[in-house]
Image 1: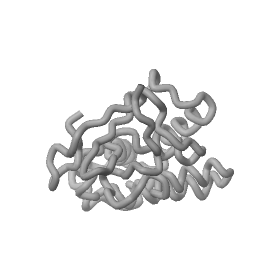
Image 2 (image 1 turned 45 degrees about the vertical axis):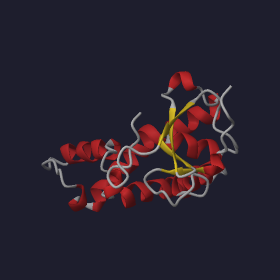
Image 3 (image 1 turned 90 degrees about the vertical axis):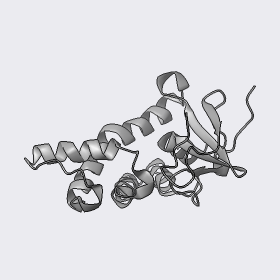
Image 4 (image 1 turned 120 degrees about the horizontal axis):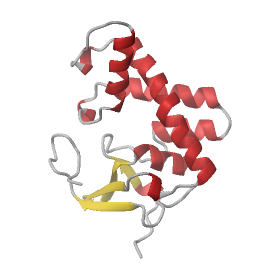
Length: 173
């Protein structure tokens, strides 16, 4: 049996100072869960916009895929430079991402519980005595927001340390 891991003791790998419980993703899902859908949606989209060009999130391409879709729809050329993207395009992409991915994931976990057979394992990295979520940020944020205290048993893997301390902050998983 794996050890019990408290969600409240896990930090985001890309914002190492921020615990999952209390982070922007958590706050957005928490607002939705308490019935304030529009406030939660705004928090989550604002978060996607705020971190889109972050150097710590170079490897995360989900929002970029939605940005590219918006650009195609607007008949604009692709923009490889995230730092110089038009904020309104990122906001529109974030709204689509929320509608197509984030909110359906929230509903699935709330209505069906967390089932690791339907998603990949939650990837954690242990570094300097702290645990960081490498993959599964939204899932852990939702679980915390709906009141779960622990990472579901047998739904996570733990790596030791980061691949490159100063670069991408991705674990070798």
